[in-house]
Each structure stands twice: as C-alpha cells, then as structure tokens.
Image (cartoon, rainbow, N blue to C red; front, side, top):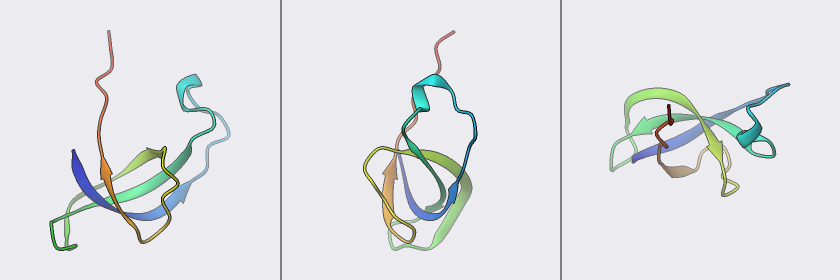
Length: 64
C-alpha cells in the first residue's frame, strides 16, 4: 500500500472489463507528511476521491 495525492484525471474511451464504471485518477506517491516521494501512476478510484485529496492505494496481483 502507498499513500498518494490525487493530481489529475484520466479519460479512457475503452477500458478493461473489470474497470468499467470506475473513474481513473493520476496519483503521486507522498510521504507521511505530504511531500512528494515516488512515482506518479494511474489508479482506479472506488471511493470518489477528488483532486488534491490524499488516498491510500493498493495493488492487486494479476493472475496468469
């Protein structure tokens, strides 16, 4: 899990079936006091976060 700050939105004309209906957000990894720490990446939003909010992200391992 990573603590991140929402910094933008992503629009997709086509999504993987499991992502249908979910908003895609650009998030920046931050440290415990809100300073930029690591990578920027795209996350699927399941809680209704907005730009500027801090969020906890989790990854799901892909099955083979």
